[in-house]
Image (cartoon, rainbow, N blue to C red; front, side, top):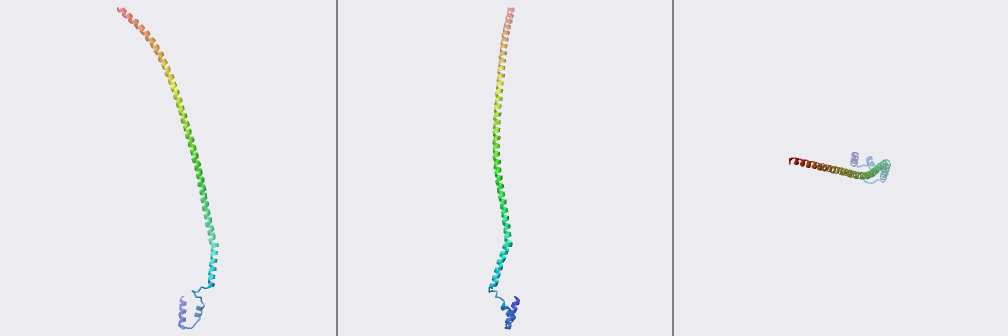
Length: 170
C-alpha cells in the first residue's frame, strides 16, 4: 500500500507516464468484478465443498449415525429388559398372591382342624367327667345306703341300750 501511494505521488509530480503508471494501468480495478476470477473462486468453492463433504462430513455423519443407532439399540435393549422385568415382577406378584392364598387356606384348615380337635377333646373330657360324676354319684348312693343301714343298726342298738339303761334304773 505504501508503494502504491509512493508511485501515485511520483506519477502526479512528474506528469509523464512511466513504468509504474503502466503497471498500475494493467492491474484490475478492485471494485470491478473479474469474470474469470469469479468463475475460478466459485469452482474452487464447489470443489472444496465436495471434497469436505466426501472426506470430512461423510465419515463424521456415518459416525454420528452409528452412535445414534447404538444409542437406540441400547434404549431398545433397556426397554426390552424393563418389559421382561415387569413381566417377571407381575408373575412373581401373582405367584406370591397364590401362595399367600394357599397359606391362608392351609392356616384356616389347620385352625378348623385344631378347633375340631379341641371340641373332640372337650367332648371326651365332658364324657369322662360325666362318667366320673356318675361313678361318684353311684359310690355316694352306695355309701349313703350303707350309712343308712349302719345308722339304723346303731339306732336299734342305742335304743336297746337306752331301754336297758332305763330299765336298770327303774
